[in-house]
Amino acid sequence: MHGAQLSPPSPGSILFDEWRGRIEAAHDVDQLVWLVRAYLRAWPPEQLGQLPHDLAAIALPESDDILSLALLASLAELKGGGSHAQYAVLREMALTFAAAATRLRLLRSARHCE
Image 1 (cartoon, rainbow, N blue to C red):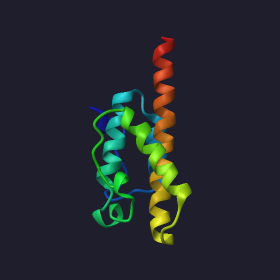
Image 2: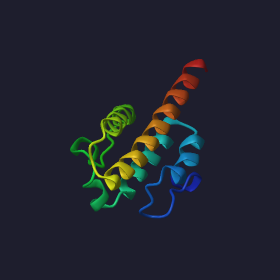
Image 3: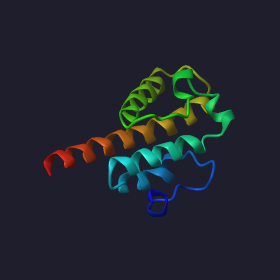
Image 4: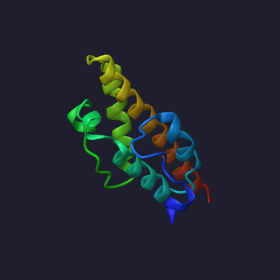
């Protein structure tokens, strides 16, 4: 099972540095989606409440949603406008989704080269 290979960090951890290695080690798209779903479940409700509405959902129906969330999180981070605490949690999400989107691109390109 995916979880046995790449267990998520401690419950409630949303720090990019704690998820980056696992994201980069994902062997396939399914494993990456599993990790991103685990990441979203790790977000405490009070921190999700600090994010823009379109980022506060914890559902990830398919792998393409990783790309959408990476774009939305990056745009929201660049736009700014919130408190320092809001920016800090948004930055963690933006960095994590950017890494996941990059890994997804690499996994898909490797699959097409086989």
